[in-house]
Image 1 (cartoon, rainbow, N blue to C red):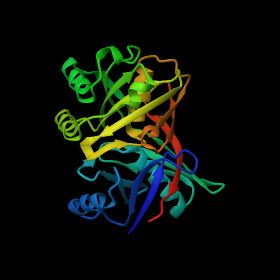
Image 2 (tube, rainbow, N blue to C red):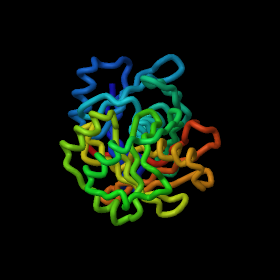
Image 3 (spheres, one colour):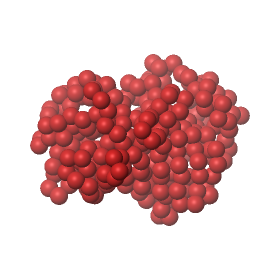
Length: 277
């Protein structure tokens, strides 16, 4: 087995979201995988083993297993490119089949994944009120062009779009209250978003569900957001760029390509770098 630490969705040579990548011949026991993820301490660690013509992958946060993690998949694609060579790698998850592509070029490692199918539904008024209270926002601070919704690309997320970048920068919440709300509602994250333009978005992603105050780059929620914008007939022009982690000092960049098929997979791409230690 081998355990690597990489940052995914980097901004040049900096930023990105750290992830653990464990590659072996057979999975350890669930308790052991959970313990490894807790010891690594990153928001997720991906565990991968050969599975026929594909790779079987499971994801663990420091506190729980999650069905899908975008940044850890990008990190896995980079790790596979480094260890097995550039190429497209089919992945079998707990509830979906996806793929990740890794490529080395000019000293950098690029990776792209195809997300699980996307979906969305209206969020209840009670849930929206609870989330607004958690962050101290008012309803008039929400951007009506992107209504609150439950969005999914492998996991459930609540999206709240804000009218101003300043409101996004001011995000804060009580961690234990946030964890209780997310676990009660089975929300892997809450996605806060500001639309700078039709194709550029700034996001923040509280992840108390998994024991992390905030993620600097979150592929699963970014894919879900891209799918939701497609359902809203947002003028995305086929792709959006997402800047995340800026307010926590780890600026990250995520590129999402949006196909025309309703509910179809989103292609997320970015770069990765090996972390020291």
